[in-house]
Length: 519
Image (cartoon, rainbow, N blue to C red):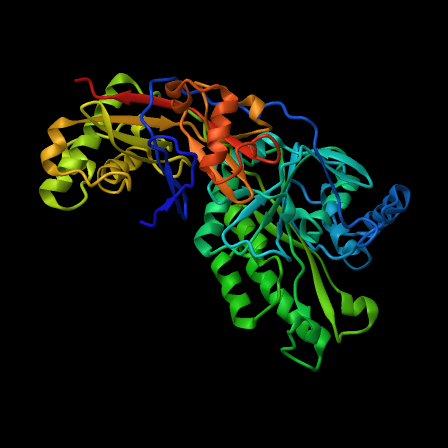
C-alpha cells in the first residue's frame, strides 16, 4: 500500500491520505457518535457555463442558428421510432455533421425527457480513468440557458472516478455540439454533460453501472462520436483506392457490432482495424449501459468527403437510435445499522485482527463464525479506530463508498493496527488492551460553498489546485473549533495557505455513525 502524507498545519494526530484506484484511504482521529442522514444537492448560487464554440463551429446568432437547425430537422427523413432511450450522434461543426445529427434529433423531437445525459470524449486533455462533470448550475448556448441536473451530477460524484473539472468542457466539441440541436428538438430539459477520459475496460463498466443506477424512464442518453477520421492529417491512411467504398465498409463494420451491442467485439474491431472513432469510450459506455432488450436503428451515414468531393481528408458521421426502456430503478431500502449490527461489526473488527495474528492470513466472516446482515452488506465508507488506555493507537479508513461495509471494516481493522504510519504496528500481546471503534460514513456529496458545512454534523473534504485534505465530523467538536478555524487548519493540512479555503476551493461533505466497544 502506497502511503502519502498530507502536508499539514501542525495539528496533533493529523490524517494521511493514500490515493487508491477506487477512492481515498484515510487515517483519522477518533470521534463521537452522531446520526447519519442523506441529503440532496442543496441550494446553490446560479453559475452559468457558457458554450465556447459558438461563432466558430456554429452560428452565435440565435435566429440564424435556429433556422439552420430547423432546416436540417425538416430535411431528415425516416419513420419516427417509438420509445427512443439513447442516441449515438456525431459532433463536428454543423456545416458537416448537422444533417446527420438531425436524423437522431428528429427521432426525439417533440418528446418530453426530464433529463438528457450527454457523454463526450476528451479531445484535448489526458484524463486517465477519469469522468468529468461541471461545477456550474446552468449551461448557456445562443438558444438559451439549460439547467443542469444537480442531483444527478451530485449522485455521480459519489463515485471515485468522477471529478468536478470545468476545464474539461472548455472548447470540447464532443459535448457542446450536441446541445443546440437537442434544444431545438426538445425545448426545455435538464442537462447532465459528461466528459470522459481514457478509460480501461473495467472502468468503462463501472461508469456504465454508475449511470445505470441513476437513469430512468425520463432520461435520454446521448453518446457523442465521429467515426473514421481518414487522411494523412489524422495519421490514418489504411487504403488509397476506392476510399469512399472502403470507408463505408470500415464504418459499417463497427456499426454492425454496435447494433449487436457487442462491447468486446466493438473494441476488438477498433483495435484490429485502427478505426479512428474518437468517441470509442462514450460508445463503449453506452453499450455497457443499454438494457439487453434495446434495439439499434441506423438512421444516417455520411462523410465529409462525400459532402466536399475530396476524400483526401474525410470524417465519417453516423446517427444511431436505440429503442426500448430503461429498467426501473431498484427500490432503495436503507438498512438501519441497529445495535446488534454494530455489535457484530465490532466483533468482526476485533476477531479479524485476532485471526491475523493466529493464522497469519486474512479471515473471512465464515472463518470467524459471524453472520453478515443486510445492514452490514450496504455500500458505505468506513473507518476503524484503535485506542489503548484511552489513547489513539491507529485509525485508517476510506471516505468514498465502493464496497460492502463489512469488507471495509475487516480491511481497516488490519490497516489501523499494522499500517498507520504514525505508530509502530500493533503486537498480538496488545490485543486485550485495545478498544475498537467504527465510523460508518454516508456518501460524500458536493456543496456549493463552505457556508453549507455544519460543524459537528459534517465531515469535509477540501480540494483546491490539485490538493486535498479531510476532516471527519468529530474532529472540530473535539478541538472546540468553529467553522473558520476548522477550514484554516484543513487548508493548511492540504498544503495550502491558511486562507485558501475562502475562495476557489471545492467541498464535499459526509456524515458518520460512530460506535465503539463497551468496556
